[in-house]
Length: 379
Picture 1 (tube, one colour):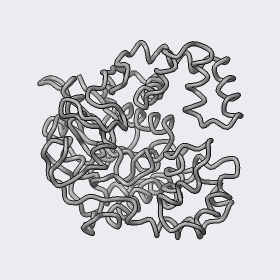
Picture 2: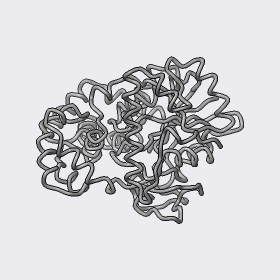
Picture 3: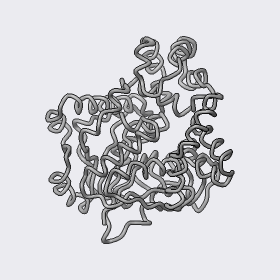
Picture 4: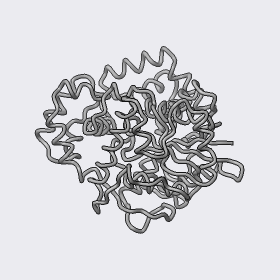
């Protein structure tokens, strides 16, 4: 059985290891589609994608495929749809497994039916017109039409991603399986059974490798190290250019330009732009998309290739099968793979190359990562 996992590993920690162990066995193979240099919360990955790939390969993953930055910096729907599409296009993945707050696939399937209900959608629109941002509008709408217990299903970030995974799986032959998250809750400051969430680890990260398995890390990066570059880029953009950035609506482009001329730090810029209708993650994604040149048109492009970051011996055996069955190119050599891509494919990879360069600029020790010269990670 080949199990698929959609990941960010920001960084790879004990909770990820536990989840992989739930399906890993001598007979099973694990493929992960992993965010690279930028992650879905609108941030630089704390460690580089090759270190993340190595860490996951040392802890149960057999094949690591990169989710291009165009899709890793998208909203939950596009993020999930694109990652599921990559797993589907491998032609070898049987099931997608993921962690969730509820740990019950039927509960999430039922929630999918609820969110698709016309009355629910009308109530969500009504609440959004009152000024609520989408996640809060969903929660309030479900609570009004059903009850608080049902609404809580839509309050967990992993449950919400699970909904999008199951929605995307309907167009594939893959099935979904979920496991109840163990350890601390998302954004919690508590540590349970030596498992802490990614937010806590990033805030408290040190060379002691806090709550993560031991694996080599070249360097770490923070987005604040490129904040002047981001603000400069935003300051050079017009309102029309900003309107082409994903998730820019309702005149927020005016507010972005105004704040870019007022603040000198990334945090101040985000706080200045913040409104009731926009979550902080959405604002951060907009700014990251802007600096990388990601537009709505680019983000709507179908996934054009499968780019391998690393594999184990078991994972290597899948490559020939993927090459035969996949309708899109399998890339194991970036230079050769890039040259063979069409215009749209090159555009997606150009953005990834820039994302890797920005990670290097944001690194604390000025570590230079180059996709053209970095070899595939083998474990």
